[in-house]
Structure formats: structure tokens, C-alpha cells
Length: 449
Image 1 (spheres, helix red, strand yellow):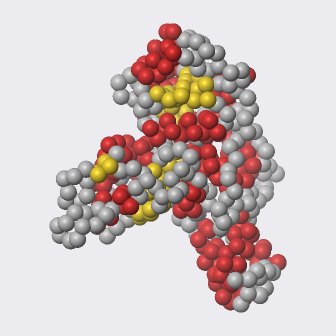
Image 2 (image 1 turned 180 degrees about the vertical axis):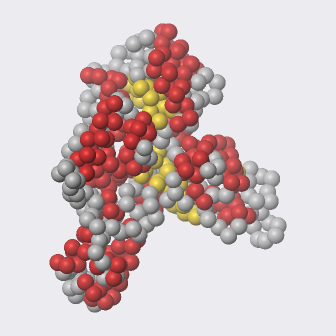
Image 3 (image 1 turned 30 degrees about the horizontal axis):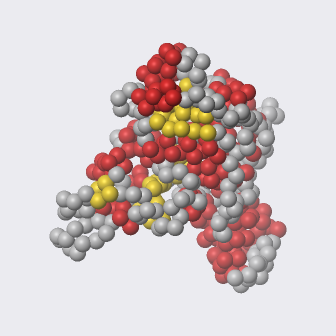
């Protein structure tokens, strides 16, 4: 057997989902590792017979041989080979139990890339060089990012864009989810083909089905659907939480089988596109309420990009404001000191969209000159709470921000830096924990173990 070049680590990725394999391989290669993929436990064991690996990353739930059975078979012949399990939320107890059989750790879907690298480096020990994070390409014109938390978001975008993995983009209304989708497409291998958008809220389920799948001649003229329009490119399902239950099952079939039929047709059409989805709603809550299919959620959510609200990234406000007012005025008007203060103190419940609308109004009223308080919407001038990150003192003089930071770090250490368990202990969502950890990392606080 030919030895591996010195200093290189080869990782075996095992998953029956091609999108998940693509995501993991693309990201790990960007970090300097060599990878090989297998679509089943049996295929993984065959590869182990022919070559050596430094680490196995395996999904738990696979047809045929499960990840747990694969782990046990690996332990029989390769007792020292570390195995990292990837699991859906419903399988976490099984994955935890499997650690007694030799798994070094488990990661919950959707995979957090920082958590993935922490687990990989721990598993490999001194073999894993501290590779720098993947650097994003220069941002496209008009995409303005100043805050560390958004720079972290686009680092993740840059890492996963070259893969064909499905991505769920989450965040409040108006935060810029479509901008993230656009950059994902521009940085992908499909950039020369179209990015097609389709909103999932329609007057009737039948109308939305025809828009997605297309329609053969019947009640009306034949038409091509969004699936066909996106051929070779990318399809964004906007606000996927609104997708009716009947179409959820049909979308799942498209993902699983790679084909679909136009409404009224008996002919299968092959679907070849990268699928992105966005949601302002918490899909975990929708699943708990019986409004969204859990199996579809895990198919869509190979990777989650959580876009933070504008109040969590105050550094972006002044540069975005200047950008928007320049667009609407055609000039570069200055902000008065009181306007700058108001922009910084306001909480922006409507996020970037609200800021853009406010700057359009200011451009019209200021006529391209100095922007004064009277040029802003009245709500921006009302007494507002301190912006995110402001220092607030408790009765005993301790800062609330410090208390929160200490609680997060204690929970991280207690749960061996597993973010799913940490979020559960803190009684917050993984998305909320992601925001907080990005903010702490930007402040130089070590949160990756």
C-alpha cells in the first residue's frame, strides 16, 4: 500500500445523500484535507480495505448498513481509527450511545462548520494542522459587509458555494436572505446558468404546483415550471415554510428521485439544479405543530446559513445607510451628527429593508444635501433602547453581557463544545446560539474548544 504524503490527512466521508457528501468534501478540502466519499457503509468498508484514512465522518441513518453498524464493523478491524457521526435530531440519543462503542463525537444536522472543524481537529490531534478558515472571494458589487458576524456568514458561504449541497437560509424578514442566495449562486459552479426564485405562498395550492412543476396542455396552455427554468442552475424556494402540505410531499419526491412531472402529464422530466430554500419562520416549531414534514426539513437543511438581524450587526448600519442613500440620491450626502446617532440607536425591526426605505425617503427630502433628523421617519427619532451590545448594569454592578457570556462558556465546556446540547441546556435555539457565538468569536473570545 502506497504511503500518504507526509503531513496530509485523508478523511473518508460516508453518506447516502449526495448533497451532504458534496458539502463535507468541499469544505474539508478547503481546509487542506484530502477526502474520499462513500455512499454506503458497505462501500466505506471496501475503501478501508484498499487504503488508509485518518478519520471517518459517517451519517447515522443510511439504507442498508447504518452508521452505527458501520462504526462497529470499523472497530473490529481498525480499533484506533476515529469515527465522527453525523445525526438528525431524532437520532441524537442513538449517536450518544454509540460513543460508548468508539465514536469520538457526533454532530447534529444541520452541520455547523466551526463545530465540524473543532471535532475534526480534536479527533486527529497533532495530525491536523491549524489551517486558516476559507477566505471568501471579493464580495459582489452592492453587497456591503462590515460587521465581523456577517464576515463569518460569508466565510461559510464561500466554503459551501462550490458544492451542490442544498442550503437552508434562515433569518427574520428583511435581513438579506435573497442576497445570500445570490452570492451562493454567483460563487458556485452553476453561476453561468440562471438563479430562479419562486415564492411558496400562492393564492391556491394548484396555482403554486403549476408554477413549480409546469403544466401540460389541458385547462390552459402548456407552460414550463420553475424546476425546468432552473435547469443547470439554482432554484431558490423563498419562504419554504409556507409550502402547502401536499406540495411538501411532492417536493420531497423531486429531491429523492431527481425527476418530476408537469401537471397533467405522465412523462418524467429530469430535474438538474441546485436547491436553496429560505425561511423567516422557525421550521422546528412548524414541525412540532405538524405543519412541516420533518423528513423534508432534513433534506432541505443539509447546511443552514443563519443571517443575523440588523440589530445584531450595528457595524453594518452606517455603511449600508451611506450605500443606500447614494443609490437613491445619485450623490454622496452627509449625515448630521444627530442622524448618525439616531441610526445607531434604532433597533431596526424591519432590518435592512427598513433601512433602505428610510434612506430612500431621506434622499428625496434632503435633495442630496446634508441629511437632517427631519428627513428621517419619525419612529427613528423616538426614544430608543440602547443598541445591541450596549453595557447594561445590574443592581450588583455586573454587566448582563458578561453574565450571558459566562453562562454560554460554562454550558459549552459542560457539553464538550457540542452546540446542539449547549443550546438545549441554555433553552435557546441553535440559530440563537450561533448568533451569540459569532459575536463572541468576533470579540476574541475562544468558543471552539
